[in-house]
Length: 381
Image 1: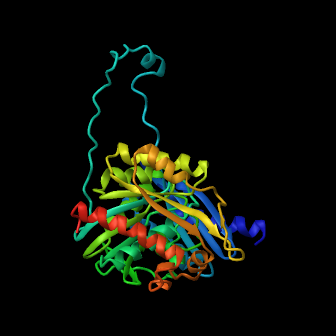
Image 2: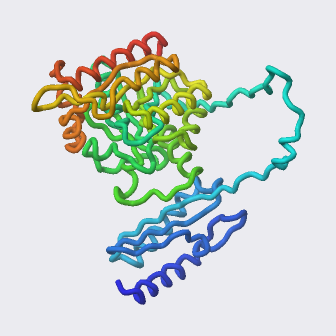
Image 3: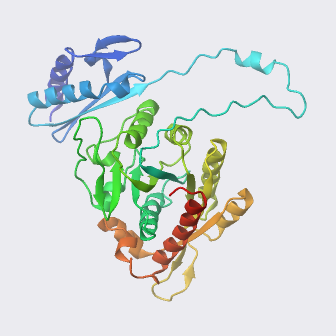
């Protein structure tokens, strides 16, 4: 599209938006004044509208209305309308220099810490919720979550998975699953099912290639809704594939969910372990029991000479767990079959369910036994 034609299209879109009102900066403004981004490329129109943080979660009907009306007018384009929210930082009650001049604490004393106010939004019928976290992206957390769910299923437990990585959902691809969840009553969603696992991901609700241009409040709302507003039915264990890091989404889940425990996945190298330790301390501070740590990509069995190669080092996660006083659940080797299964959308533990000697399957099954014992000891099912 030429620049002049694109400019004309942008003008038409903005003119159309003037008939809609959206909350922003504490008042109602026409939607064209809320445009944070507008892109037109390859017959796709992407429109990002910025609204007040508190209003964002209740504006889904308005977003759909705007999206549909644009689709009716520009029928030759694929339209995507995204809401984002900005929440200004609260004003400081005490200037920083005044805080520094306040009276020092008595030796050995600390101000009393207020207990965290946790909202119990555990879905009815779900006996246990386990967070699978990493602190750092790219360490194989999603692959671990999926295969651990299957190992627990092999123990006779009914399992579900929430892919809570809003910005990089991987569950649809790893299960070769792209259909949209149904909403029979228009208020709650029915999770999809595959391999007898109940599944939910933001990737099942939006265009697979659409960027998630969401700020903190919208992310938190989306994550909570995927837990609270889904008909999970009867489950023994719901595993949450956590987004990497220790930001808003992670804290929201840790503070507002009655989690049974957390599992931390890391590779052996120091950079990954630095963030894994941060994840451990976040769960400790939010009073979520850490079931243990897993070392992923621990070794590579060379397919040519059968030697063990420590590509990322070895034993770093176990050493970190011992230093933290955290249980060590085991290590998972690098294996081409694990990569192939993820690309094919068939979990390795499903492909090798009967092959108890496969090194990766054997590792996951051993770790799964530790988790099953933890759940039994805590009488979660």
